[in-house]
Figure (cartoon, rainbow, N blue to C red):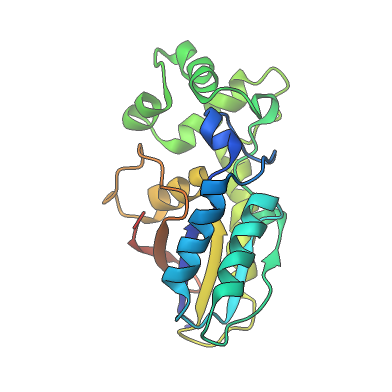
Length: 217
């Protein structure tokens, strides 16, 4: 069984992050601080040899991962594989909406007023399901739809022909990191707290499992 070492970095800060807006398949540019986040991650990881690199096809992820790869001094791969499989959750008509308002609309019919309370009492998966219910167009991804897509991304990494113990760079997104940690973290981490822009989460990926090693460092 092949074991891969995943280095998951959250993309640098964007303008939607500053404005506290939901940013799933939509996109906003990296801020000056966001570019610095990417450079700091690049400095931190410059001596690690990466055999492969993956990210979504959103510019915030692509700019972050290319900065990291450009700074690498360990003879790593030069270009990432980009795929919609690695995108953030799709928030449907709530794309670009204030986060507090969106999660209030999702939770209020169930007696809960914010993301923290939904996740504490239920789960991130429930938050996805309720946001789809609240979306007038019902275009937002529910939990089943989300994982059907992201699991294809995990399989893309698994079937990339990498050798055992290979290092893989994956620039990801806030809710996706929370979702991975909720599903694979064994309940050891606080998934009500969003990971920092540019933060590092490490994990091991095998043919049939993923295990979180460290989160939001």
